Length: 543
Image (cartoon, rainbow, N blue to C red; front, side, top):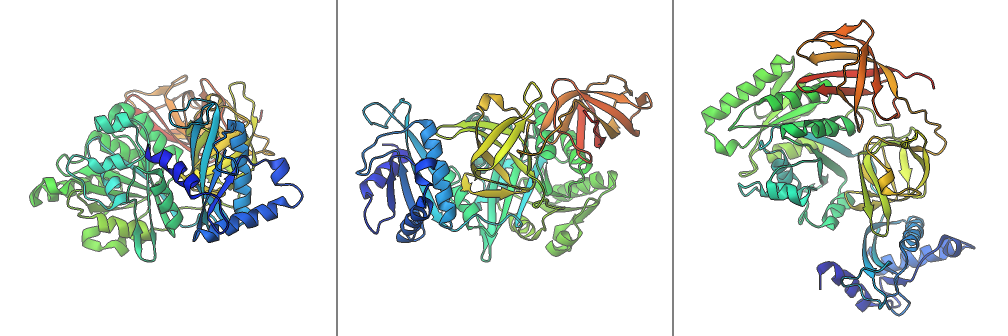
């Protein structure tokens, strides 16, 4: 029997009894279970189960009152989770995790391939944590310079085994773990309470990530980007498309600053993101080589008009006070000896939320990834740019390929596998959507309030700066534009006819394939081969 199946078996074996923490429900419907005052009575029942379980209750959905496995359709299961979420909110609790299994015609779940579902929902005491104590850090750096390994050691507190073992603790694909190379964005999380760091004990379990989110008073999320040159486009998406508070650039002591590291630093600084440089793999070199690399990093920063601040020399308090668009703290680390990890802990525990968080504004999120989850349906993930969203909210999704927007409803919200009833600006979330299929959603789409009246555009006006180009930019130049989570080819038409390397000027930018939601003030990066530049949206034409 698989460990996952054992969760269901244990819940059924414990049974539904008076004074117990387990509740059986064949299904929950909005029409029946939320009508005529039943919401209050069912919420009271749920509250009683949670109190009986010392702060945790188990709801088994898709079973009869005597624990017989019946199975319900995916749509019925989704509606049941919607109702259960409302009951949990009414009871001052929240759904922490949901596990589902397929059910065959004979009621068996092991290896079942039928259409029916049975699920176990874990409900815990307390509402969701507040959003004001949450920072998001984007990592960057050359391949094999220890980005993922460093983050893996931070979120677990474990020393690396010298083979990059802790990098496997991030949210990465199996083929990436096997090859030891990241090919897409991955995510890690840890947090702090009054007693210090809260880390993942078993990062391979989704529930362990959820536990960190639930217990931490302050949360640190990592968006771990890709170091390999062919995937620079993905790295840019991670640094531009997320609502990051800080950047963390890694430079390996045995290699020093590479061209890729310089490019990643340029992207971080071009987006005006306060950045920390971590010199990694200090255990592989002697003191003389380490000092040499430290000097190389300091020269690299001064070459781009930034002030390096050695945390070893000046202390953590000075780094926290001075970090800015112009001052870059530098920390020496080793994931194997854990040198410098306590320093990074102290920094991340006390660094303030960077910039303004528009939690009170209107909800807005750009889609970065999409999934299809059994029993839940289509899930769109990304970073909330402004406002807040709740389970049950009615939203708009788009633009679709025809430029229109689709009415959708929020089934549920998860953050690092922790189910929440509400999330606000700055959170990296997965939002399960009712009213759309996963294949219809693509990266770069927007989620907006139902009454937003969005006006997607194919072109906009921008102030641009050419950072590097072998010749000049003329009318029709087509780089890839990275704006929020949008990554699409676009044609540039400089207002003065051309732009030379180092020039700043205005241009009309026209997307080649799709319209998008674009707003004045948004910053973007454009790149084509070795050519790159940055820009700011200055005008969006009326339709």
